[in-house]
Image (cartoon, rainbow, N blue to C red; front, top):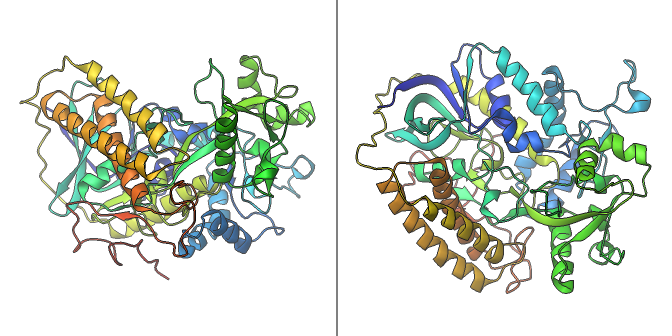
Length: 545
């Protein structure tokens, strides 16, 4: 029998969004932060490139907003973009106050002329990406983790996996968690629950994401009665290292920002033939160009080359990339890097307002699990970390102002009618089948027929998983498969309903972009219109002035 633990606020997820939100809640609140693995295992820790922010008078909020709207292919919500970009300087100042050390310009690093080193990435018209070499996520994660350890009101719950949310009437009331050793399910009461669980790129066979990116928060919020939106927009990072001894190592976009070029095996550059911006075109254009050339030539990969830049510059600015490639026999100061596209970012997610609030009272979603309206049909490079911090701050303020303590009686988890499984091989088989069919049928280029076939197969998989979930003791692989099958089904439904090509969604049966931009909003069977966010059910909620 599990025990019941009580918190004022329970945060599921320990990346940039989850940790920064916890640190900005009032110190009088008892806060629990759930980490599926160790703190360094999530996507934030491995983020290389950096965070976009307006930090210099050569740049402007208006220019950053315009670049984001352009990259989003007509589907960004301008109030969300303005809301986020206007807070970028404030976010950087807060991170620096938390001990995060970003790179400074070597010629302006003294106290009087201190200035951050800024780089550029695809879609940006100015240098505005602040970074810590090519290990920005690590610098942020370690800085925030240090502050979390110093906070007396915050408890870290390590190696625990979300089973499902608990509701009391129309409100969220807590969550069930699978213990670290998998032997029990704990019941946690909370007056507010925040889902900061990241995206669902593990749905694809090839991904830059760590193993935990299985869409847990999106699936749990859907089951609780939250709408989701724009899940067809799966961003494929153009440059993932292609090597038999390397598992999904992302080659940061900042290399292209500093002059790296893409080549075929014969040395020919190909990006200028696809877009006048060349290698600095938005990620969807670059990824499709690489996919096109690989299929046209039957090639296993293309090549990224920065060997024309000075060796000391490359090693200083990209130490992680240099060292990782060197371990595999690739000296990037002398040799080209073999690369392929890989699933990288989930642009859609749970529909939220400017405070991260959802259709279910007391439930918030921040970070990659959320659909705020910022990214539209294609996330511009390095806007994701900015979104995490802006909405974490906004949600923390909203929770602090609106939280009401509730003494809800919760029942512990009951697993008295299930038994241990002797069919674990079924889980592994279904895992492989789901990821393979998503890659083949719902990948960079789609067709209506493939989407129909994917929907049928995923429906069968979900039926098998539901039966397994009802009969056997739960395990982490089963929970992740259950969540990912649900989110994959939602992705396919969104994609099938979009009979056009826009941003990251390219359907060769409908290659043109429609003159009218609309969001793909899906409504769960248990949706409660009386407690839902304001606005119509098929649109993202309006922002307050």
